Length: 213
Image (cartoon, rainbow, N blue to C red):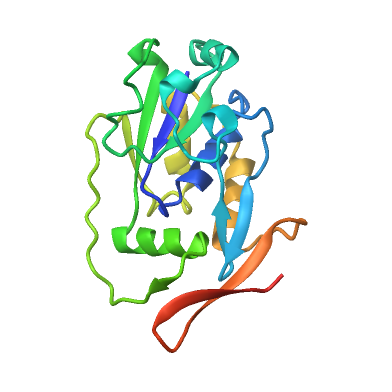
């Protein structure tokens, strides 16, 4: 079966997907299950997620599944976790050959659309003009099986347990505790290759970045 995680950029979907990926009955897309920490900006973690076909762009549509992934997707006891920014759910399943019951669709609702946009810019080291906070409306599809508010995810194991039980994922609480430590900054990875940055606003009101290490 496939657990699809649909979310706007900057909403924390890669980290949430990485948490679900720790379930014992999930097979990692790249066959390398681990905590996918990309970098830190202002001590905030940026996760990453594997893509179908191992291409740089996140074009995760069902027709990109290889034969081995299709076999897992058609299974009743093994799962794939796949991320997508296709919030209207219009392009992901255009060439679907699997039963609808094999697709579990989770839509992540961020706490704040404006904050998600800023998180996306910051964690991808994109320079931008600092602006006063405004309302950012997110257009989403209504065809998801589950809607998850990221407001509660980092704090409550009971919410995660209820969700994973409903889906059929076998996630241990110790994995959630580890995830929470990463998200809150209590645990920061210093593995070679994981870079740390600090943002600052220059005289022209542009957010820029300096590498710490």
